[in-house]
Length: 330
Ligand code: CP
Image 1 (cartoon, helix red, strand yellow):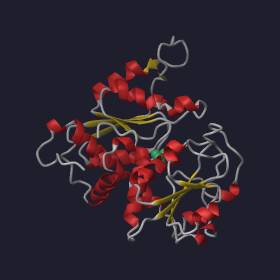
Image 2 (cartoon, helix red, strand yellow):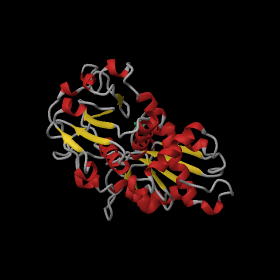
Image 3 (tube, protein in one colour):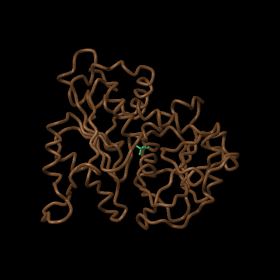
């Protein structure tokens, strides 16, 4: 894998899931793989799980990770081509990214969407420019439209838990929120569920919260939450703002919050959320504190998802310098 921006960069989703589960059992087995390599983790936006799990994953592979909070500590970057830089931005991405390419062997980047300009956000302009100008492999730590490391951890978690000889029913349900949030986690989860193809996948949300069908593809989509939940094995809870009326909220819909009562129609479903979560708004405390919740296991699996991805990037991009015995990839 050259870069990791979306599922399109992955040749074999199941093999990557298996690799993550293998690393969970054998965290330090590939310490030699990243020895002498350095990853820069750049954050234009806040993070806890992604930042720390990727650092742990890099260390498990023998790499050094350096975190740079560009959004709060760095120069304001310009991404527009051909502009006169007489505004707030101080440094152009064309100048900054190649410098980072000299300091690091690999770059991780977190950048949120504006939620103001759909075409610009959905063009993934920011992360694409890092790919174009850094000259080193780039890993998405969540971009304007996708969160692939989260999605891989989500699939690792489902695969780890579900052992029956049938497809699990997985429901992605919209949840209430007071702020407009990106569609990234929902888009990405839908994309990975479709790409994996080993689950019955249903998306449910109130009218006005339709996702881009590029990502939902052949998922069953319904406005009826209780009908969607019936027989579910996994319920993935997430808020997102409107895609069609871009970045807007369409009513509070507080009744969409998942409670223990709502879960009674499920197949004793496991409840997922990428975190952070607002208790008793997005998801009830009784669910988060109860036996249905697997959110901590899910967040813990972020390490193994990141480790599987970083290992594949190391093997692909630096194969000539790898010692014998660590070359085999998924
Ligand atoms: N789920 C997730 O990406 O968490 P952070 O924003 O804390 O990294």
